[in-house]
Image (tube, rainbow, N blue to C red; front, side, top):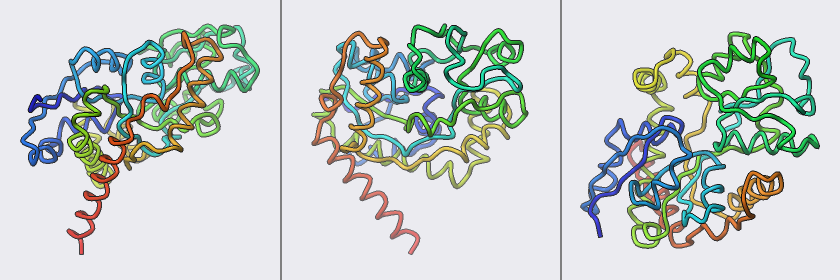
Length: 308
């Protein structure tokens, strides 16, 4: 077995981003004699392929990519998840837009990160409004999406992170529907099956390190914001607002998570985004869930003892 654990990092999974800038993963894996290698890449939709080809052993995204990976036949396994992130982003429209409801998006252009958690948000919104997924023109969002929204080229845009914060706080865009009305949108971390089966205690330690990274950010939002801004650009104030908005608690995979993820998978299959239906439970290894739960409990107890 390799003595290195390769962790995939992209800025759209903030806990992994922070983990790569702190020494928490290295400290967590030291008792196992395991080294850490961080592999930086752009875009969470690449995560499943990088896992199965061995480029990385751990990755993280929102809800959609692991569902799509499973539907594509990739043998991914869920590692852990965060609390819901209702403030991470949602459907935005221009102030004064004639789009007053999701149903008004029929036949219109919507920009989003296709394949990301944003696809699930849009699919659920359309499904509930009785609009077929192919009745809107879904296009990839980009740096000019907000300008295109304001000019009327786009009917809606799914913003996220500091871009969402800036667009709404500046009055450049307004929320069409709260994300919390549609999906829970947790941050997810996953691995591949051989790693899940063979390296459960190490993966549990990484889950605990992810929570520790988040607790550091919650206690030092300004410092965390500076890390994000230095790496990715943007205003530190917007990054700090983003850091303060999102939850950082990490959970082992349980039945509630599986049921919620299954509901999302069923919607994506029903609207035709997936090539086939999937059973989320097939991507769960119970022994790994036990290792993660044990590692999280031990880390939390250690923190409690330290502050007594």
